Amino acid sequence: MLSDLRKSFNRRHLTDPAYAFLFDEDTSGEAIALAVGASSFDAEKAELLEVVAIPIRGNLLLTSQRKRLTVGPDGCAEDIALDLLRFVGSRPLVGYYLAFAVTLLDRVIKPRIGIQIPNPVIEVSSLYYDQNRPVTGRAAADLRFDAILKDLDLPERGTPSPVADAVSSGLIYLTLRPPTV
View 1 (spheres, rainbow, N blue to C red):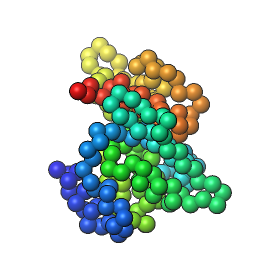
View 2 (cartoon, one colour):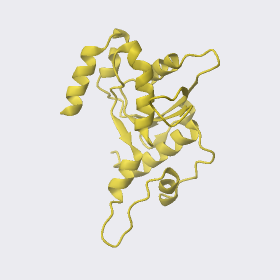
View 3 (cartoon, helix red, strand yellow):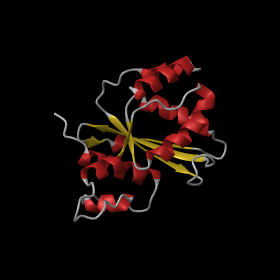
């Protein structure tokens, strides 16, 4: 219900009709693993440096179809954020600490198109927590990125980067989401 109200509000405030596709119903069944690189961890002040988006279809993480966008020396963060929106469409976003990425992207795109990103957001640490809720006699779930990967017996992400973070987020999602028919 709240999601419908927010979507309706965003649709009314869209200033660039070229992005109306963001409100189309997603029928692909896909999701997008998303990660960003930024100049700091303060989403209100950080500069967007890089965005990585990897499609997830069925049980596959489609790394060969990933979109990696970087802000060059003469580049514009707004351009790569809008290119990302065209790539993602209305598909759900999947990631770790996705609130940071979405806040950073919203800050870049809202002045241009009048809205924040309307896509559904799936936080992989929430999926993990839901399956590992603390109970009497069991320690609280460790929600650190690398701890989740280790607990799920997934490959280490190596040196943190947007590509590694998007791949790892996608693997966590594929491991924890309800099975598809």
